[in-house]
Amino acid sequence: MDLAFLHPLYEQPGPWASVYVDTSRHAEDTAHQLELTARAMGRELARQGADEATCRAVEEAVRELRHVPDPQGRVLFARAGTVVLDPLLARPPRGGSRAEWAPLPHVAPLLDLAGEDPVAIVAYVDRRGADFELRSSLGREDVGTVGLEWPIHGTAGADWSERHFQLKVENTWEHNAAEIADALSVCQEETDADLLILVGEERERREVRERLPKRLHDRVAEAAHCTGSRLQDEDVELIRAEHVQRRVESELDRFRAARTPDDEGRSGAAEGVSALVEAAREHRLEELLIRLDGADAHREVWIGEDADQLAVRRTELKALGERHSWPARADDALLRSAVCQDATALSLDPAAAGEDVPTGGLGAVLRRQ
Image (cartoon, rainbow, N blue to C red):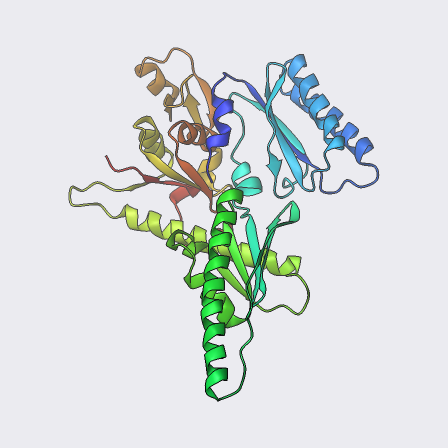
């Protein structure tokens, strides 16, 4: 997950309100339900010590969600009476709406609720052209059509003129497949889609896939020609889930390989809170791997005002010259460091049942020094 959009959260000091709002079950009484949720979140923040202005800002922001029918949910990050960031969620918060007041914004759940939710372009390919459709947790949208040239159909004849016509058909289709691949590449750049799903006959899918730029090859999945006009939602969801699982497994393999020391005895991976805190202070984080239910994710660490001011014990910060310090969750503290170091992060929840994951559920691939 690219964490750049979280930068505004670390440009201002805390404490922060982090409010995850579940809108997935609202229907005709949405306004009433959101009013109840707004009041409940405000009361909960006040109970935890939030200032009155921030409680009011959160309550009003939750009420305003009635004008924007988010299908799954939204998270609100607020401080000093202002909602600073309010990203959409791709799936409902586990356990329903909840609010937290803490020195750092509680961003870790975003890795699961908004991070690994690949936006897909479904390309319906045949000899007449291709239709492109954008599919995500927010629904579907037509994003383009490629119309191709005649002739497009071959013949079964055997004389010279028919063979010549067949050759023209093949040459035309090769050109058309290249046109579709080029248009699909442009569409991917414009939409920043994570996944390309080719739907059609096997040969047509193969011809288009082979002509896509190499940078897109690992983003392509294929589906056989569907009998209906469009790929069903459940089919798209299955392909997206498989894509996420492959990516998680690939990143885990990279982490495991990085554990092996180089010729100078240095490892390219870190795991466990102490090792990760040290790597964060040295600005060596490249990609954080977090299993949200891991034992270390909830561990308490100590933070200072800057992202690289963190330690396992408060006395360590004092030894480093930091006069002000606060307790924070390990996952949120490390994510703050990752954002400020332009690192990425990945939720390991899809691979939770796998073996050989980072100790305690927290690990990182490190930048080489």
